[in-house]
Image (tube, rainbow, N blue to C red; front, side):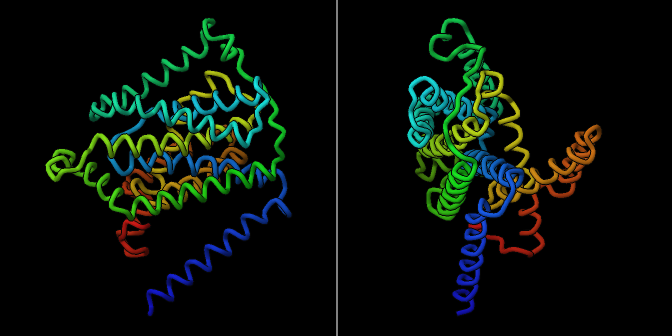
Amino acid sequence: MKHSLKRKQVLIGLAILMAFLISVPFFATDYWMTLLVLIFIFTVYASGWNLFSGLTGYTNLGLAWFIGVSGYVSSLLIADYKLLWVFAWPLGALFVSLVSIGVGYILLRIKGVYFAISMVALTEGTRELIGTEYLEPITHGGKGVPFVAGISLPVLYWSILLLAFITVFICYKITSSKFGLRLITIREDEQAAETLGIHTTREKIVAFVMSAFFTGMAGAIHFTYQNYIDPSFGFNIQLTLTPIVMTLFGGVGTVFGPLIGATLFTFIHEILWAELTILYMAIFGAILMILILFFPQGLLGWMKEKGIVPRIRKI
């Protein structure tokens, strides 16, 4: 009875929060909408990275590859083929997901630091390839792809809000499922998981492809928001490192840690950048060092250890 009451309270709270977020464009300024758009984009990036790396233990240092490939496909479809953004976004995400099946089949047989290095090499190699003169007729080379998608800021806001909600919800369902448990088993001891009959390569590929789809979708929206993409911007290492830091900030392997990390990270970054333009990177670095030293499991992991929130996989 008490559990049922708490569940209802949580659902009511979430419904109120969603109603508030949906109504934001009706009263907020463009600045606040833009800030929330960035928070939701990086929430999807961080959740997508966490869905694979947080659960399997395989550190993906090539998140920017998912983002850049999907961003390029969707941007070119909008700019050169005049496709509507509502079709271009999922096509970009679907393309990178399909390619990720082959990439995952090859690279996910490599373990540890070698997998991480391979993903970095793949990202850098793709960036160089897209920027070459040989692919310039298709990718526009190093000149980049400027385009106007014809989407208003409120519609863009609602689109990324919906994607962030779906991503967090699916991460919640996966983390609390048998599939999620198999991924965690791989993270804890892959050899033991194989002994138990878990098809580890297949499970890792599925998680890898799902991560590619969600981050790719967010990447397509991100570059539509920017109205521009080029090789150095689309495959920037910051698009990999920032979501990882956000996940570490909130809690690796948790459901809501990436959301917490993306929200706090973006607000802190914005405040420091606005108030302390010269020193903000140094202060920001100091904050990250303190978090790593005193909150190695992230804020949500620390809250679980202290009993502030239940120590369950669903959180």
